[in-house]
Length: 357
Image (cartoon, rainbow, N blue to C red; front, side, top):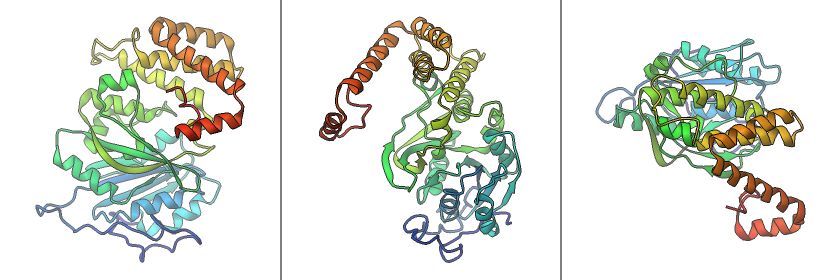
């Protein structure tokens, strides 16, 4: 293992797997000079990758970090005791890693915090083992932070990809502050976020009691104490959608964790008084989604009624509008033949859930 990752090129790393071409297999970012234009050293960037049984994807993640051409990089991998090929792949790249370990942990948040405890960089980030960076993402993020020292975190747009790394659709973001986070929702593609290390420490790192929405919770804490900056018209990371992704397999837990984050934030002493449960569109949406999920999956009808009541009392008009929309969606999918639905989507150029928008 190394202290700081040197500029790694294609020729330095293990050869790509058979049939793998393009970024980050046969393409790389151009190496940056050792110093910035003003002669000062590049700030150290510490990247942590939490990993657990993502052997199918992790090599792409690792190479996308190592081939950034960034001259002052720490790369730390915290594996939770994978039983697939993950450890073999990590070991293959060991000479270029600052630190790695494979041992049971208490979940993703704990793993990321373990990595950050070893970080010595000025700027911190985490990249999950099924996502990967665009070329020159680190340089662009660092330049954005260096250009405005008032900001504690920068982020950009993302791009959804599938299991084979084919691009599916853009994941646009928007400017966010404490108020918009707590009334409009997260909206920040997590792997595009780069944060000043002191700001993460001040916020207390990730909440290890949260196994979902831990990024949302951190953004809110950072927004309470500092500023977040959206770098528009840039894409820094690919986010992979696949059947085993946590947000796909643990939908209800994700929704409930989001509610927990907002509840805690709204009860904080430094929360703006204008942010409350009543009249909050995000609260009503989350409550209605929890109610709907309980009903459609036959989980708990009493919980469904309770959360529907909460949705109505938090924002009656918006809740009824959303309920009407859901009923129309259901009627559409039941009554309209699939081939007609497909034709409509082709004519409109939309995803199947967007036909009413």
